[in-house]
Length: 167
Length: 430
Image (cartoon, rainbow over all chains, first blue to last red; front, side, top):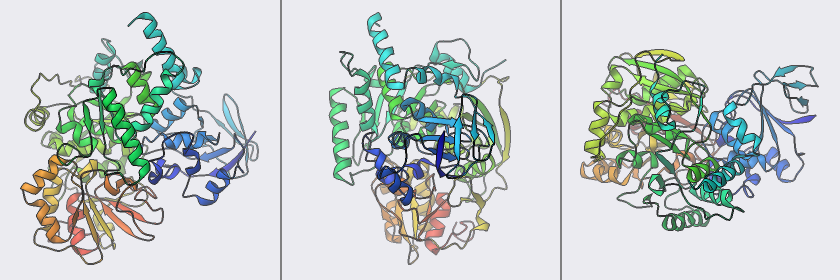
């Protein structure tokens, strides 16, 4: 069971998740401090570690639209948040899978701050309201990368295979 | 069953005779572009090789391009440090398509790539920037990726596990009226499709209005296709593409244009006629919040920005300079002009556009992304309103969540700067 700690609408851009003015900070070890920097109260909670790992940000459609900045993913990954949304923008979704941020797409998903969500292999169940929202499957092209534990380790394995073949 | 342009490009790049939407392929990458975020790519690239005992080697340095544009010249010691790190890496790994902060060959990545002939019709281009979609203007399949994915491309030379996207065909007929152009067309299209209407899809542009459009205008369309969520925009290469590459980019080697099959399968086909189209404005805080100019004319503005990878090219500056020549920027308005590249800056100087801007009271800045993404210069104060030819107006985009950004064409930006309010360029300015 995971608790919703932030509720957002549709089309949440990477400028909102990780404002451009912090883009000079790139390392995944340094980006978490700027997550949702303009949501000052929520950002303060994250930085003072009042948000438990696995907590849920609940959003509508097209979460992560806009810039390709990977900081928008590493900043959330740093707090081990789970993002449950109606669906995701392409580059954000790809970056999330590449870095191992937990993202769950469930079209029409509804809830509010404080709701308890159960996330199974098939659906998101809002235990506070009783509603059930079937999952949209992650694009199958990405499955191998998820299985490898992220793109760095996937690529590392491919590089080793290539070199051992002498190609 | 035929193939779309992107299906054909991906089939070739993956060494297959045919592919269709939904197939998973690994296209060979023809060009891999990064800007300052190469600092993160470098970090992730070293991570890939960590513990392998192998020397980190880029698969083909001649296919890697790095352009500094987001924070030029560096606004902080942190940025300067990142840029220094990238410079050292570029030197060690023999990356020749490197454009540092220079007044002659520097500029915004999405202008540097076309004007140097780095992008060819039929090629696969990836970039660690969402507006990499721009390069579809030259008939390439060009899309944005994250920094870790770029580290993977540098290591392997392919984009791993790419799902062939479905394609929306947009047929554009008619002729633009004076004061209306490609920016108004793409804003209108984004308004129709919405910010998510083309998610995971390609927008393929056709029709007489596209055939008559310059490469500069096509770059505007493909640049902003991502604002409807598109993986890429693309204009199949034609005579104008060849003209641009030969005459402006000085490419001499053979070109291999890729065209869609007449019986290609499209996800959706849209028709637009631009004849009666007026100036369009994207209102705060989403790019798909598009209105005809009559709905917002008279809105007070504090800052006008002309520039960016969307509208900082020579024809954009020409349009704006003609409107402003001999006139003055209104009191209470700050006007900033950012030519998209050093080459464009020089051309604008020679043709007198820079003089027109400066005499009018505008500030002509160095080529680069400028205030578009709020990291460098031209930030807004609380409650202030900007009118900008850039491509995004998300909350906080121009450096302050308590400000507003409206997006428009260069003609609207120039006419409005003179009046201090959003103004229709067709009324007296042209």
